[in-house]
Length: 383
Image 1: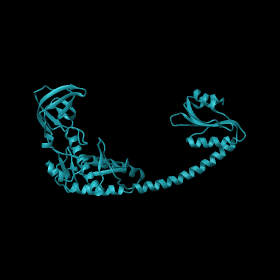
Image 2: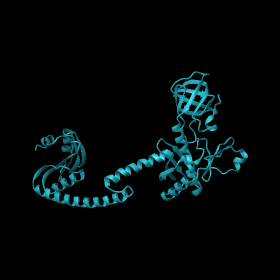
Image 3: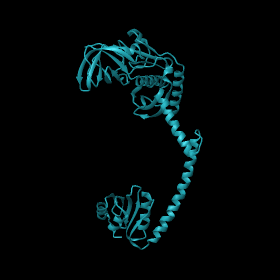
Image 4: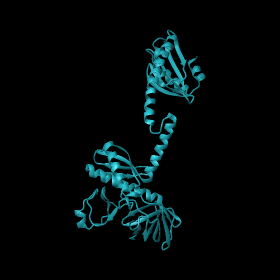
């Protein structure tokens, strides 16, 4: 078994390094390369692995297995040669910001409520943390404010390796009992936790944290958060969306919510008027077909509910069958069809087959859609 020096613990900001290739073998994920030293962080502690380049090959991912640090690459390297490794720094620093922000939030939640972090996922878009107890939105806002105060204090992050005796006396967050060589990461005023990941050196490098949501999850809650550049990108996106809304509503950017409320109220009133007009139209249209037999009607611009209402109203006064069709934007037609005390099942089956349709309902009342022209529909009905 080969032992690799972990340069990412010696200097978390090392972006480039030289190393000797100790082993190169072909595996299921491409080539597996072991180096005498590496700055590529392997997946662990909830943090994805680094990627980048090693000589003339690409590092896809890095894992530690059975004590060996394995670099999975898309090509081979000659054993014994010296190569230059270069990590994807933008990705590494982003992960450092996210991981460090998570520590502060998890530590503050634990301090305030005694809840444990029972699940942590560092996704490509957001970070999720699962806590063992309930946190509401007001409490989440308080945690966010305190977390950012700690970040802006720009305190030094402490990383140390206590002895077994020191570890026993130390209060720290961990999912399990630990012994032997343990790496402790401390964010002053927020968190002390056993962790093998990479973190910023000073809290100010996190920039800021933004807690996006908190929802009930199992016995506790799941919280979504962003740190650093991700938080800034998110706020810029939200600001741009709000700017566009403010333009469309002719409202100041800080008055869009009030403008939407006003629009909703106006819309409610207009919907009431439209509903009243529709009721009048349906009653008037139904009166035209009183005592008429087998009505076939085409109406523009009606939604499915209105088509059904009109069909039912005509059905109550006409003789025989009533079918109402209304064209959709894609050229197809929605329909409703009824026959008082009738059985339309076979007729509907034949119609759907002839007009490339689908739908169904009760024996005496059906609804659906057809992919056919008005002429084809009229031909089928003999109208």
